[in-house]
Length: 156
Figure 1 (cartoon, rainbow, N blue to C red):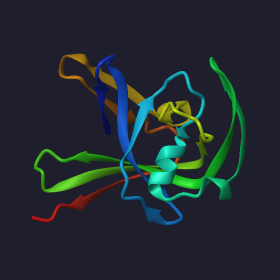
Figure 2: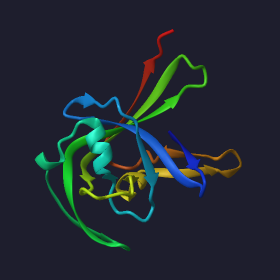
Figure 3: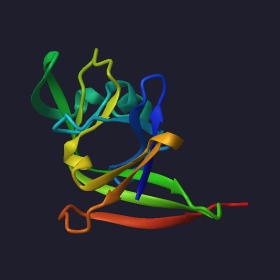
Figure 4: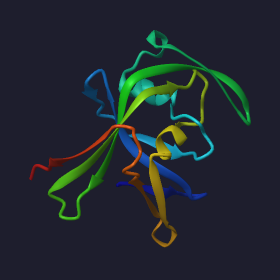
């Protein structure tokens, strides 16, 4: 399960993840907007730069279109998103790693932030708890995309 939250002031659904890329886990937490209308997950150029990714060195990802028009993207290949959930006993972190064949990166000037699209969200059932401003994504076991669950002990 992956935990998320409702971001003020409009109550937008958001989730945080680390990026696994080139066999390294980033030390930058990425704040994704959950966008059930977006076909693909997209990393903002600002988040890519914070992680240390040289956008100009990435392959072309193609053009995508939306309500505001079309943009050219770049693509990160063979990446993973690591959603981190604190365990109730606070002695370890539960980590949920979703493997992604491709992750698009928005062009310079993209100002909408990073987006978690249907290529990832369709792997989950979404459960909302509006009273507590939280939601969770529960993995659909029959979904063929590869994932792993693991725990990391916390140092005291």
